[in-house]
Image (cartoon, rainbow, N blue to C red; front, side):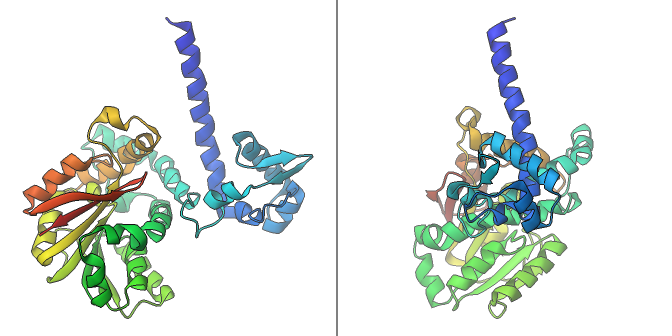
Length: 348
């Protein structure tokens, strides 16, 4: 027994337990509006914050103490302040680094623990639709800031010749569209194009239709329930998969259907969680987050479907390249990347 290594590991473990508990408090702060009430950066007492948010003052004080211990807020002389930098991540939903809403995904991992246990002791499958509903809203809120910040400004321009097509009027399919965040971002930017969002989860499609109406793009966006292997239509200029292909039971079948649906020379935009090709290259904070989420969400969903390939959220570019080669695509390349995403282009 190496006593020093034991103590180092115990320090790490206690830190991780504190982080897990802090995420529960982040979810509370987001849902109760505590961060938003502090977004002006001014010092506030627990009593004043409780009054502003309609919460119990004693519990607000304890929450603020926990936030201060985590370094999320600053404390001085009985008052607490949310710095501008923290507000970008925790209070401002229009910020490209806003993550507080996405923390709700972590709640689903705990709420669905018994379902994951049954999957791990059984056939491995846990369908997406069987998760707690907070997963669906949390997923949208986790990915939406990245789509708003990057999709129109850098991801689409990194594709060969796609932006001029969209400006002139293209036909686009968004597969696995969820609540339609990515579809709506594109529709707002390219009013001459038509967009068709497909998802196999009926409640998500209903939410997407509502989101499109709210955004004022209902004239050029249609949402329909369909699987990735059987979505309707042909003659698409662009088919998109945003952070969803690795969740599918048959990603080769989905890519093959995209190949059939595209015009000659058409393009697939594939956005996947950032990953290198080897496990040892992914032993970092991003890999840690995505492997953990994939254990509870992504891989069980894939295993619940036909084929059950189980790519996982850290599939990496090499495995994804094989998927599209098997589906018949002529070319495949990394167009660009962010710390959280690989942005890949496949051409028919």
